[in-house]
Structures are given as C-alpha cells and as structure tokens.
Image 1 (cartoon, rainbow, N blue to C red):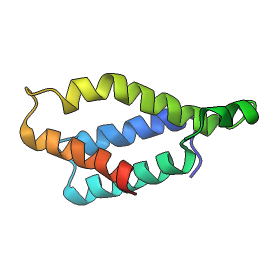
Image 2: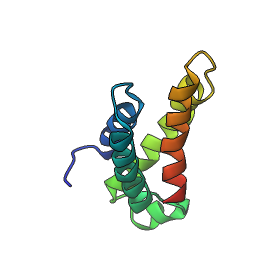
Image 3: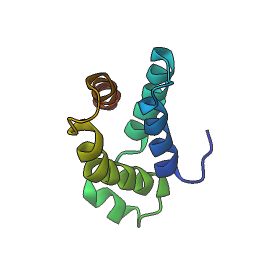
Image 4: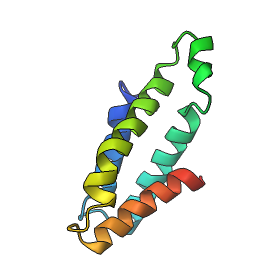
Length: 101
C-alpha cells in the first residue's frame, strides 16, 4: 500500500482507532494494519540505519512515529485519567496489538 509518509499514515490509523465513532471491527482492522506496518519497518538495531546510510525512509518514518507516540500520545491519552476508561482501554488495546503481532 503506497503512502507518502508512513509516520503520518500510522498516526492517522491511531486517531481513527481512538475515534468514538469507530466500531470494534474498525478498531481491530486499524490495529492490524498499524501493527503490520510498524513491525515490518521497525528498526531494532540502531546501527542498522548507519549501515544502510539511512536510505530506508520507511524505517525512519516508523522511528519518528514511535518517538512522537511515546512522547505525546502516552501522556495525552494512555496516562490521562480525565479520558473515559473505555477510551483508554481501546487505546491500550491498540498498542497491545502492535507489541503482540
């Protein structure tokens, strides 16, 4: 599936998953697409990009995405007790799918 910026696409999937109007099936589909793309392009070895001269822009996009999610999403959604418990539960389930798949 061609996209211009994988980080933006993944962020949009997270936003779609978080939408109160999303159904269980839509959240699950978005989670699978999110997990598949992150796990396909994630770089587990920081020296990997050095060896590839940073030519794999999708790996860079996923790194950017994960960094921004770690910095912003975690505190604004996952740890925010003012957000309804059901919404936080759905958000946690989205990230569990990324870790499990």
